[in-house]
Length: 127
Image (cartoon, rainbow, N blue to C red; front, side):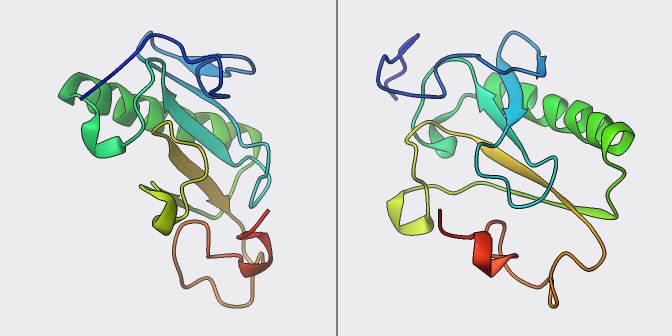
């Protein structure tokens, strides 16, 4: 596993817009939200693949996931959630820095909520 502190080319290596952070990971709004409140949970140190993250990073991301859910519960009051990770270009990963999507769901946000993390709202899947 190769991990570097900061990549100048990577938009996730900057903590700009961080809403929450714990020193190992931070949360910020997705620039292309699927629904209002869509958050990204991102390790501070650059690593491209979620499966290459250390146990410590994964634990920090999971702790942040629960903090982010509490924030969204207060601010947006969604009816449900999707969360997931795209790993590799063929799986839809467009930025090669590991990150988790936390997508608040609302009754009626789509006719049929079945599907994957970004595909749950087909008209927002591609951007």
